[in-house]
Length: 332
Image (cartoon, rainbow, N blue to C red; front, side, top):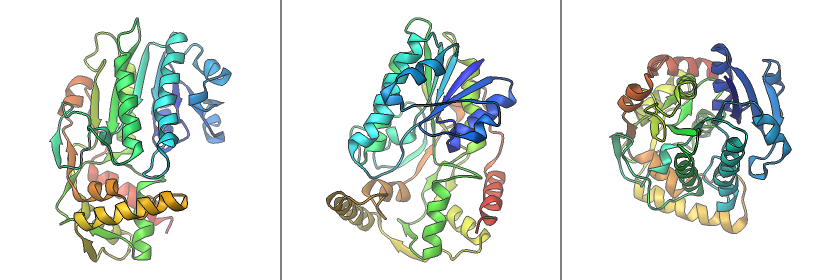
């Protein structure tokens, strides 16, 4: 197929591009930035703000059969509009442009946070409802985007599905591990809660494989059409034990301080307010959403994706951790 990947220069997006190329597909990428490394792979690059649409998006979609929509603004700080415009507005523009261009398959990268309500989710399946309220604009924007993507399934010959990778990590991770390691080095990393929470994670190569399988199989008769699936390693990890394992392997100091969820939640509320009042950039050291994420269990059942997509993880958690640690060891 000829496939357009949005955010093809990003962490997940670039892994999706490489997986597509390895399976013989023709690949294009559209992003706000320019990525010469993709051009070196023979990937046509287009630059555009998806929320604006415009000629670059129209050109990028010409002759394309499938869109894999990885691009999104992530984070826990910033105005609601700064997330709604790219994540919800950009998705609506892309959906409309893809249908106008004759695209028949649309695979959307969502997030388990669309369902996160602050309580434990243990081995949860895709029947978990979307949260009714959100503590941060990112999950709200992704919830609205997921709903509009799935609502367009079956409109003519246009078919959609959504994958929800959780805590994507691996070599080259620009978000999760760097933040964790920076806090550990500076002595600012504190355990939130009792440390027994079970959490699912997604190795980036596995996440890319699942997206490409969905793109290849999506059709009117496919069981994945019009549905959303959690995407992660087959087995969850005990979050704080895994963090300790990573820190030890990298010869970084262990986490010695602990704070209750209640205290972290209240501190997060104060820091969010200060960020807003003083117009500070970047994410606060703690937020209500992050406090809940660090203290509660959020693990997801992969049986549904395995059944409907025939997906089997390529890299298990032990090997994924080893590869990731080896990568970051070379950077420390």
